[in-house]
Length: 244
Image (spheres, rainbow, N blue to C red):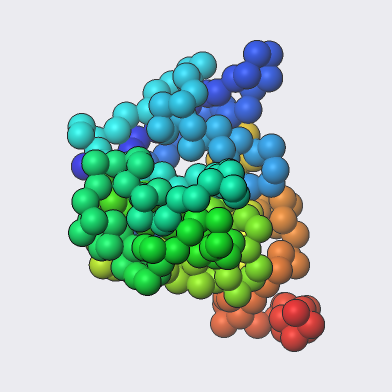
């Protein structure tokens, strides 16, 4: 049974229609990435799935009792507030010291529990948000532009961690991103969104779809370079990679 089923979903804010006729599912254990330009409705889709926005039409069905872990885009913590990582993790759940330690381990930062939240680097902070999402052993992890503000190596490391989480916990992962170059390699399936579903499929299929190219061009920071073996005639990818 699908974890999430979206049927003919429409989302409106006032007179503004941001999503129309969206059909999609998230299957157990898969990594599904939604890409699209700013204003394409990516966050609205995520909000509809978690029930934070009411559909104007269609519906979202979750598997009964579905455990969801959510990693927000960013979270502001008052830098003057003295709060350790472990204390922060225990604020949001009835979490034990043990479950906090396991979640930090799963997020790839086992040694951070005693550190102050205000002293963490951007990458460490995101890993702690990931750990917080993993505490309740979710069946699906939702990530909203979770690497915004991290540099490319930091983003790539974060996505590798996500792949590790999937391998070790078998939870499904639905991520929203505009970072095509790193996301494409991690995904089983990609949905390209621009108010509606423009195209979807494996990363290689989406990367060569005309609708995708119309939105992102071919020079999207090396999204196609990952598929060089499929697209060896795109010499500009090679030169672009070398220039990075």
